[in-house]
Length: 249
Image (cartoon, helix red, strand yellow):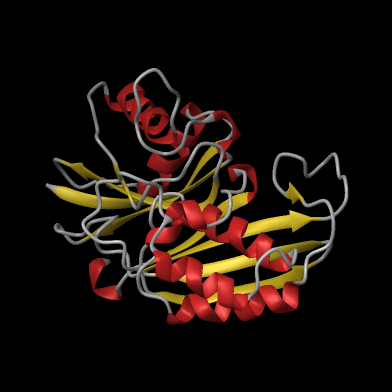
């Protein structure tokens, strides 16, 4: 058995997230259907994580197994791209060690959230329009608190099946890129709905509805109801996933 990592990107607008769900179109399901069309047999794939409905990925990674080595991985990627819809693209397929796991071996993940303060018909599906002004300087002060935080229960979707809500955030920052403000956050792992809840709570800080002491108290409470609303998923992107070099052949 030979294992491979697939690097891919997708526009999440038409999908109910990454993971296969009953009675819903998902990215994982669509790729597995493309494999079935190509090989006439089921080829299960395992993603590096879940993305919510409408969330995009500039870089998602998944793994699959083949009973024998695949000679031309570039040609396989091209054939899959011909079958897949226009909103999913295979970037490359690479061989990895037999025990490599797209989810459990990821050492870091990076998300970006895009915000604009004006109406732009060409960005409606890809950026969040924020009415009113935000104090990004104080929001960046709150970001520093995230770097000190271990337990992110206050920003997690309730009743999930994870064993711990501890995460190690190594980077969190708002920065202007062109006409948009972009929140970049990197961590070893993320909880379900975590980034969207963090952004929604930072918005309340930026609007002056909460101060830095309130932000600390929200984290300490370990209570999702104390944090802000989750922002819409259409402006959120998974942009990078890191792996140790020893996994790659």
